[in-house]
Image 1 (cartoon, rainbow, N blue to C red):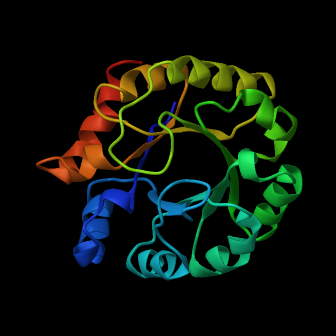
Image 2 (cartoon, rainbow, N blue to C red; image 1 turned 60 degrees about the vertical axis):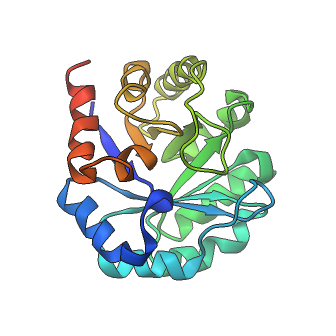
Length: 221
C-alpha cells in the first residue's frame, strides 16, 4: 500500500513560504495540505484563495485543501480556480453532501469528506461511491500541534473496512497529532495518507522528517 505524506503548511514559516514548500517538495512530500478555517465551524481563522494561489505558483505538487468552514460550497469555484487539486468538506456542515461532492468533481478536483472525532462513519456511508478521499480527524480540528486521540485508531480501522466493503479506491487520510509514533498504528489500521504539520516543521531537519515518517510505515507492514 502506498504511503502519501501531506505536510500541512499551517505550521510553516509564512515569511519563507516559498522556501518551505520547495524544501517539502525536495524532501519527497506527496501533497501540500492547506487547512482553511473560518472561525465559525472551528475556533481559528486561517487561509483563503490568495494563499492557495501562492502555493500553486511555487509548486506542481497536488494541493490538498481541507475546508473547515460553514457552507463550504461558497468557496469551491474560487479555490478550484486558484489551483486546488482536492477539496475536503465536513458532513457536519454539509447537509447536501452528495450534491456538494458532485460539484467538487465537476470542477476537476478530488472530492473528500472529513469526520470530526465525535462524528460517526454513518455520516458518509451513503456517499462512499462519491468520495476520492475520506479523512478521519484524530484531533478536534482548529489548531495545529494537538495531541493524537488514541481511540480514533479503531475508527480508522472501521473506515478502512467501510471503503473495502464498498470497493472504493478512495484515499483514507488521517490528520491530527501525526508523528513517528502515531503514524504506525494508523497505518496498520489502514490509513494511506497522512497529514503532518508540527511533526515536520518543528523537527530539526524538516525534510528528513518526511522520509522518517514514511520509513516508519515501511518497517511496520
